[in-house]
Amino acid sequence: QKEVEQDPGPLSVPEGAIVSLNCTYSNSAFQYFMWYRQYSRKGPELLMYTYSSGNKEDGRFTAQVDKSSKYISLFIRDSQPSDSATYLCAMSEGDFQKLVFGTGTRLLVSP
Amino acid sequence: DAGITQSPRYKITETGRQVTLMCHQTWSHSYMFWYRQDLGHGLRLIYYSAAADITDKGEVPDGYVVSRSKTENFPLTLESATRSQTSVYFCGTTEGNEQFFGPGTRLTVL
Image 1 (tube, rainbow over the protein chains, first blue to last red):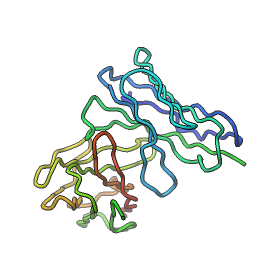
Image 2 (spheres, each protein chain N blue to C red):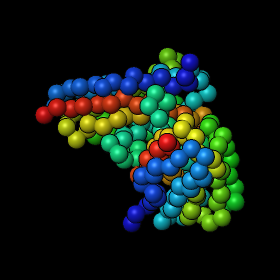
Image 3 (cartoon, chains in turn cyan, red):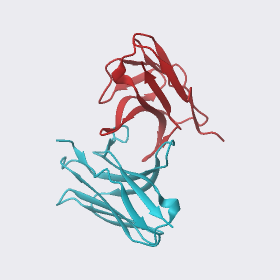
Image 4 (cartoon, helix red, strand yellow):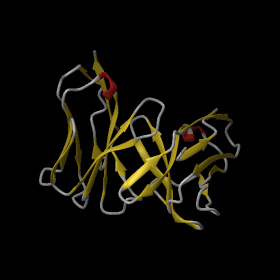
């Protein structure tokens, strides 16, 4: 079993929809939780970063962490075609040199 | 303002050959890393470096060698390439809690 599990998708939604992306994990020592966005043929870029449990909002994006369930989520409101990308969750015990990534979920937002 | 550059962007080589992938940062971030990205596995850490002349193994270091004689460069060498090393390789830097990735090198080993 992988330390971090993520549904690979693809997830197809119409423009304007609310998107929910999720990861589960098994290592209770993870404290830092990140979401990266990766466009085709590009490197990942950091989208959201959360420490421990709770919510964090940034514009149309909301990250949620539930450490009791070992479950993290990324919500995208009013999704746009430009949001079409692969979304990777990543986690760390505290050493940011050693991130553990999920396999990524491919999101397709159609106009 | 390139940030992180990788070269070559695409490489085809044969089994048994030595291949070096280059990584250069225009900043002066201390930490640098190499990941490989494969379908079904996501990103896996190969090696990382805390500073010049300081390197450490990640999750999948076998078959790879790194060096870091200068802060801005972190080359990755496949000493004798195998088909299982066909992958997309990303290098980058870490600053605070954020990792910055380069554009990647797509390597095919025939």
